[in-house]
Image (cartoon, rainbow, N blue to C red):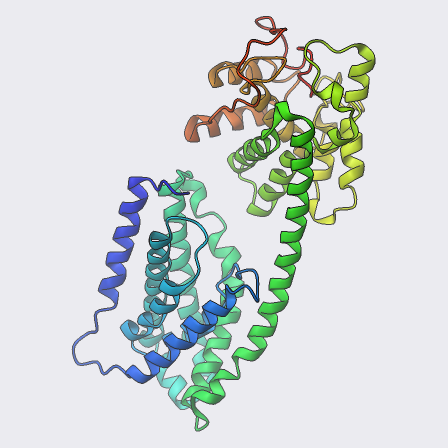
Length: 443
């Protein structure tokens, strides 16, 4: 997202200002600068390795939080917060604007570590770390980890609500629950680092704690590398469909986006939202098995030609059946042309017999088809397309999914796309015709 809204820039500026205030050392507190420098260098080095080409993928959960949390357990709050700054400012950022994203990451970690250090100090955790009393140190360390997690979740939810206009009731949903467990593990490793740091063996022994963390992180990174390879395969399939059916280029990606909007509006968790995005992207992959002349035909199809095209859901299901991580997306590929009244295809399922994922994709597919110009129909305005979905709600489309899309588009908007030459087609659908009735509307 290159064009960051003004409200998001103001929010980030406020967070950065708060972080700068947290870095101000209180009077009378002695700062061990050598420890700050050592931990900051260690964290920055780990971040660079995590995002290097050798690794190939950055860890989604904050790769080296143990170093940051060890700083919170060892140092005064401003000094501990300073540990996060070099690593965040020097980390690799793929999306623009780079400077703003680096400032955001640095400020977020500064506030999180500062809060953790303050809680840990207030509960007497530093004395337990100095004495090497691990059982007693677990309580303050746990409270500090919770504070760290809460601050990160609070800031993440805020940026979602401000920058992407996610409803407040959903912006923070699940953020703490998803991150608490992995951060707790990192917190335990950070506590072990701090205890060993204060032991007679010194900082060198503390570094040994990072070895098992690096191994576990590497294994997790391989999982994400494999998932990225799967996604690359999906993109290749979609590109093949776009090349074959040039009139609908980009349609699959837009259906994936609309499916994701519906899923989020329904309050589905992030993992299921991602699956439904895949379902939308892959819903027409079976077109690879349909003759190109039928996909690009202008005007009405014969009954025989229509029957051939109506095989594409089954072709698509066969193509993706062996991809395990797609989950319920496979059912959406097979059933996205079913209708609630039982007149759809390929199996004529009725009402609740149609998988929920297919009901989501059906609405997203029809919406994008109506708002895009193709060889057989001109684009309809978004308002007209939504009104048509409502008209067919209950007979062709699930009313719940239609209302979810209407609400999501009303809040976030939609940019209709022109996916063919902007010329008047040979056949224009009559006003009030059902969504699926114009020739080629199922393509």
